[in-house]
Image 1 (cartoon, rainbow, N blue to C red):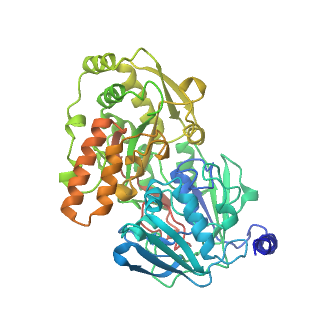
Image 2 (cartoon, rainbow, N blue to C red):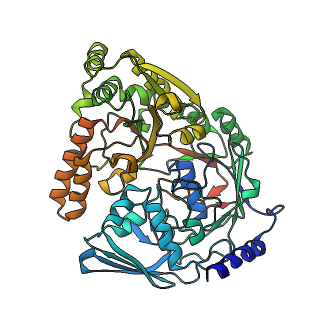
Image 3 (cartoon, one colour):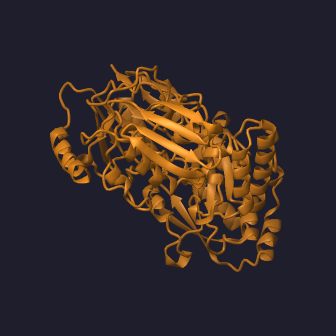
Length: 524
């Protein structure tokens, strides 16, 4: 069977190959927030990779604009034994871009690969007795503890549990997929990619959408475009001018300073597609000096004025950001307000220097990965670097593009061997409503997100949260978790922000949600 499927792969790929559409084809030209340097959302959690993956790959469940999970590749499911047994049935007619049918074993292989990189997936598999495929369309989870959150976990859109052919799912999750083959509504045109400049996608004519009304990543993914081209334009003024002249159709994140001009421009529409926004932070390396020392991390937390960081990014438009913030975005003040005195009342620079001295800091270099081509991370990196220097840290500001930051941040080496100490980044606020999807808040050591914080108490709190359905008990867990996150400084919060997007008024049908999606979008 394996040999037969390999032969089908080659034949299917040859049969589907065709030149890019031209002439009367409806092409949408899009300027993403950063260069697309990765085609694998399991290997790389960057938002630009997440946006690409939503086009090409699918997940078993999808989230609507209200963050509720719905079946996507799944036709239906059955939860039994209090959440210890789940049976999922795949939709009929699912096919990969190479022409092969999507089989249950493709899904289980993909889930196993994803779970080795995603903390939520790791926790799911820790409760797994067996993951079975009794037939080509049926997946059975047999668990030793209840896991009623399965739909929500498998509908996550950041580090999504994308389904790829079994042969690709055998790829080491710590290495990038060699090719982008999914079952989604768009096909990736690998032959057209020019890293740092151009990427292209074509409508998957074999895709059969669900009959449901589309809502973010749930429902029917109906493609009304023939082709989508991504143009990487690192200069924000150039990108905005291209939108004004009609050279491009959509700029994902315009420079905030340029929004007033775009709002006044005939033929251009600006709007907030993501009402949840993102939570910015500085990730700190917990493996190597000097940021492996708790006292140094606490001094770094004390050095940062979140309002100063947000102002550097957004200027005078305070409607776009919220600061100070903590670690959760639950919407419950009883959780989100815990420990906030750590960022509301900041020590003086002299007091922060004393904290460093007490921690045994001896002028070791703090290697800051500074993404100078990113509208948000560039100013954030500048303010963070200055704030760290002001308290006496020996900051080595290494300027690079965001793609290089994504490559460098995987290194677990010491700073003198190509490693790093800190970098500014962000995560979708919609995934920090509770602990289930909050990747940045997990502390599973080398299995955690870049920076690799390790704290047994936080990991125990996650298990406690999973094991109770009592809302009051879950709130108590999150309260302790937020306080513990401040105490251990698993990272340094920088503020929460929402970002308007801008597009030509000839576009319609854009869907609301934390990630950019291209189905339901029509171009007049």
